[in-house]
Amino acid sequence: MRFLIIFLPLFIFRDSFSQEKFIYRDTVNNFSICIPHNWTYQTDNENPGIKLTVYGPIDRLSNKRESYNVNIVPLPNSNIDSAYSAMVQSISKRQGYKFVSEGDTIVESKKYKWLIQQHINTVNKEPMTAFIYLGYQNDKAYMVTFASGTSRFENYETLFRKLSATFRI
Image 1 (tube, rainbow, N blue to C red):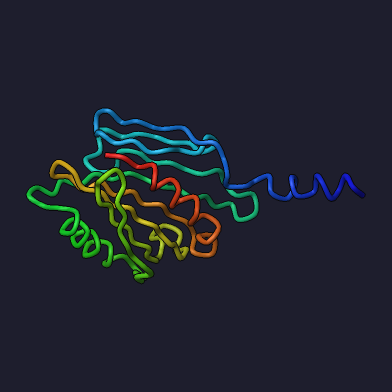
Image 2 (image 1 turned 60 degrees about the vertical axis):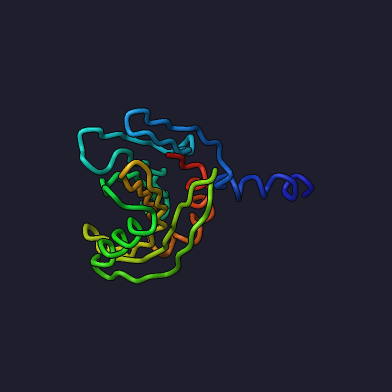
């Protein structure tokens, strides 16, 4: 019985989100962000926008996965606030768009803005929730979009926020 009390929590929480991470550094596009060790990633320096896409493991029960990407958008003569306004104007056109919350933070003397929104996935029609983290530097907006099915978002929001806090430009 004592064995069950001690080791059962280990088996139940083996898919915990307190996982090891490594720092991905993109020296071409001048950003870095942590990636959980059991997640996969791909880069695309030929694409004018998305530079990094990261995928979580496929969930055995739902056959779904969480993901995030880093998208760089040229916005000359702008700043973090006008870049944020342009981003909101663009994403609000998504099917089923719904604003959830927003805020800003300061990391190493640099202001970042964030937004949580919901929309419908255009491919599989699944309701999605996204945590979007935005930075601005050298006439470019750096948008990190962390996405999950709405029914699973609550399980990943803490991880998404921790990963966003590692983003540097």
